[in-house]
Length: 336
Image 1: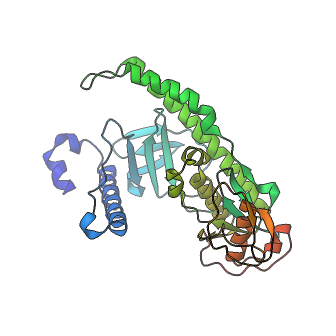
Image 2 (image 1 turned 180 degrees about the vertical axis):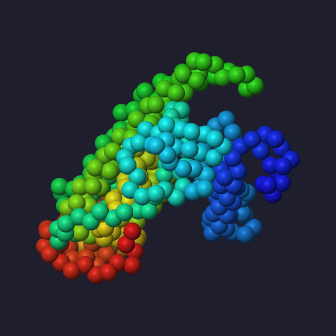
Image 3 (image 1 turned 120 degrees about the horizontal axis):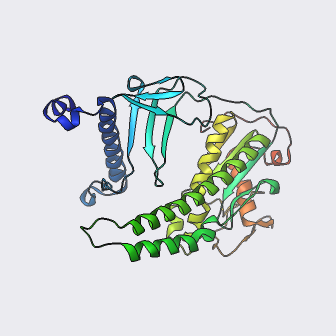
């Protein structure tokens, strides 16, 4: 069908066929995934329609080139269609890339993201394990006090500046049908710049913490956190500022990169179980109650610390390993 369209339309024929084919494949893949998610969540009689896609003016451009659509020569990137780009390399490529995606961010900066085979950089064994429980007061509470991740609050610090730029955009927005004013475009760029800085701060803190955790521990038991329920609570803004999902993703990627064992633990009832004896309370603890007291053995500990130890127990790791005691970790069927 694409070949026929290119024969009928000159404007389509002027572009390279490789990224056009990839756009169709990406669209088909996203449509199939969206339909699968909708069917899994909703009853047959109440199925919603397809998700709406962003307008052309609101979506940032992105093009994907497979192996036959690009080549690297003399440190420059040659794309199909006679496009030659000078790339500012962040680091050397460890292997020949299989594809490259060219995209533009909200600030107007262009990036080239290459797909290369993942390499494992093993770290020396330490004989220690760690349990990680996600929270809002602290992003990550662990079985080791030295590896807790406090809440930096980057979103709260940037909220005033973002609100000011958004008010500027609202004042300078012209009626529908008229071209966007220069002042509105400037305010939009300033808001995007402030938001990008906040995202990069979160990413930097998450990566440094993940690297420290992976360096000091051979096996990590992590709560398989689903943050959607927090969006309906009074702590929704603070939970969004914590960026727990992004931090969890960085930890998983870092463990995979350095060949560490990482186990995702089902979070159900982890705040109700005792890490010492395994007893479970009859009622869920409210979020305001920050101390866990076992009704069977009488153990008292901070709520998040108890949950972190429960992660170790459920993952089949010896909690004594949190104090750097050597242990033999069983094979993990859910290693990331």
